[in-house]
Image (cartoon, rainbow, N blue to C red; front, side, top):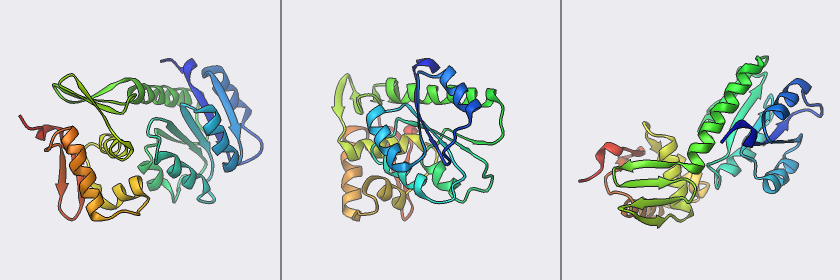
Length: 227
């Protein structure tokens, strides 16, 4: 994959796009679709299926956050870049939970944006085309959202897929019960439903890699794979 393969949805706060930034994007990627409102952004997202969403905003309200949260419920593959004048963004922690690739503070040099685009390309390529190694004989395929175990494929259902993507994207930290429930069920979840989902995913992967930290949450620990 190259930069020229990327399709971009560019969401702006104001009606007038920054010509220098827009021109640089047009020169670098395959296609750029621009919009200034969330309703149109939703339509463009469905119509264009962009590889990357660039948000150019000062975050005076929570509309864009809500839009991105909604996307992430079903879409872990699309990369996000945030561009802003806001150095003290009250929504930064929420943006980080949405796996943004870069948060760029204006002004910045063209090279910084190109570096961010290249980083997004790497992440997109890894998510879509690569296998994530779980053990020597087990992989997770991002493209098919399936587990390949001993050369046999096990397709994950929607909730299993969302959970495993969440665990993979957050290796090294414990994901709270609340975060899992919000990501997968939008907080409408029972303890029994979560335990059932964990049990089903362990059956398709390995019983020891999804570790429960009592009263806190779950963590992906690949070194705990059973022999």
